[in-house]
Length: 441
Ligand code: GBH
Image (cartoon, rainbow, N blue to C red):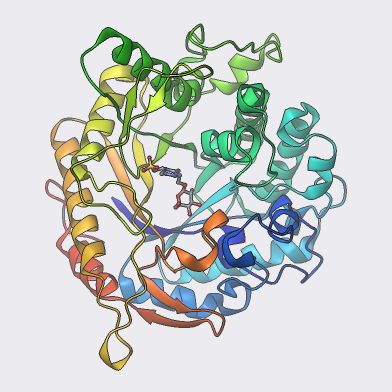
């Protein structure tokens, strides 16, 4: 069964940050520091999904999806990131899981979508190897409670973005600006992934994945310097995260003045444990040129000549086909089935007559990208799922509520939900199925 879904993340939709014993995460801290997030927005209330989840499940049911990717907030489960398990926090995901199953919607749970307990950040966060063992403990606690009913697990969401925005550039929590000294955050997240795989499997989890955000890398020209720069970028963005989980080895990092001396014997065996799938999030390709100054071995040359989303990101549906086929070409038999765990676009807030939201741009975006999945499948890539980011307009990290990715419009702060034109279009598109597969569900 091809999985058609929508995706969300705990901090971006839940709100209820002080309820039922939830602890503080790095995003609570970060959003309450002046100047970090556009307009001072926070996830304190967000979409109030913590209270409105029955309505959100009804929306998914009406949309006709057969899966829902959500994330579990570590600080709800373990308020201090270690020690006692807060069953009241797990109760929320327990209710959600059962209600989804009742509607024949396959729950797909992500264990970590960036909301690290603040207590762990105070001890170094993902730069500290101890966080890896805390993550394994948390994974075990979640699996103890839910592995019997959640068939699809994703250990981490986009460890690259968490490392770069959170630890290298500081535009996301925890707001550190270590540039290339952030690399241990990559290795420790990946090792946490490896240990979590073991805990999930020990508790009978049916399918275990990791989600990496991947981008096709386009050299700005055929000049050897641009080609070398593009290769260096591909290593940092894509291969640093895909190679160790699929091949059990890090790529050659010699283009960078970095050391991975935090890697210990046995780590890569854990990181390279077999997976049941690779989750990939795709937004756009990246065009890379040789550096003009000191520092990094590449420069972002910008993709031009394509329409852009409200965020300014280029819309290149064929980039998804290129990415999927490229993964197959690089990893061959080592590539497990692929799930597109996020794809979507932000659009301006355009309320129309009678409370409607006519987001034709999103319809064109989704139509093109679903077509790209069909083409990749025709080229032999085993793609098993497609999740739209996102079900709801939500808290878009450093951009607060200014970027809207939802199939469903959310009026902030009242929380009123209104399905957009894309919601109705997608319901029809799902019912037509993918080429080469019987119609869904
Ligand atoms: C995902 O990250 C996250 O998983 C999700 O939480 C988030 O809400 C969603 O995407 C939307 O942002 O400057 O043109 O080269 C996506 C990571 C990083 C992908 C920035 C696009 C830059 C585009 N994104 N990237 S461009």
